[in-house]
Amino acid sequence: MPTTDTKVGPSLGDRLLNIPQYLWPQRLCTRLVYRLTRIRQPWFKNAFIRGFCALFKVDRHEAETIDLTAYPHFNAFFTRALRPDARPLSPEGWCCPVDGRVSQVGMLTGDRILQAKGHDYSLTELLGGDDKRAVELHDGAFVTLYLSPRDYHRIHMPVEGQLQSMRHIPGRLFSVSPLTTRVIPGLFARNERLVCHFTTERGPLVVVLVGAINVASIETVWAGVITPPLGTQIRDWDYHSAPITLNRGAELGRFNMGSTVIVLSGPKTLAWHPAIQPEAPVRMGQTLATWLD
Image 1: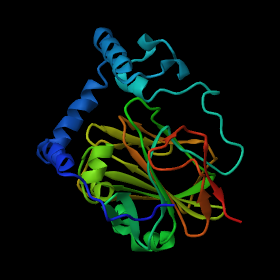
Image 2: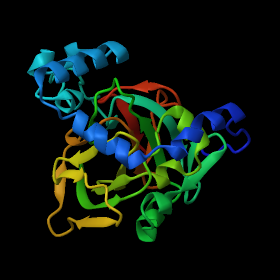
Image 3: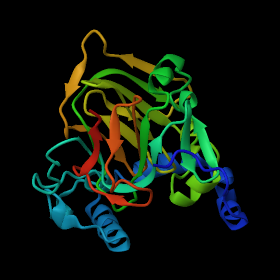
């Protein structure tokens, strides 16, 4: 299973292609996308949805509501629910929380997480400087899952857990595409993100929802919309006195536009399923990992 690989870095061509990202007005673009995706005029939102489906080859027949004109705005379609039978849960182990593609998977090396060839980054920084939480995960397991625009954008629990705390960490809004992941150092620890801490029957589970350019809103089922506002200060929520239990496969939250989810577990707790390899496509509900005996 991969951990780190610093021998091969991004090419010059990749670096040149990413230069515009440092120049874009990231927050302005994101605010504009937020407004555009919520326009309710039928002619606009219907054309937007149809054009999006054609461009990204979206399988709308999996949706609970197939009629594209029934959605009040584009974002309602983008965060659409699927038919109850569209994503059956695997019978055992951890289930995949999202539709998408595996970016990286493996074990942490102490506090370091592999981002891409030539890049790793700090777990402590990813968690917004939370040293205590980071130590619990040192040498643990991680998987980074990328959601493309065509994917289903609700996020589900890989295993039953009790929510202990949540932290919103403001940051940049770089794209999280595979190209950007190869080039920008510490990408996921630099972008805006929402860190959700759970306890499970075998130890800690952390689910990180990473924001990106055009990800105009992140929300959870227990707290509703977290962003906007994007903000400039870290915000914390504590649920220790009244922990919220979410069942395996239950909806956790959603991206209003696409991004990346990082799932982390403590050391010596699980083994990733052999099918969970970098670049492999995944669907919500398939086996993600199994508990170690």
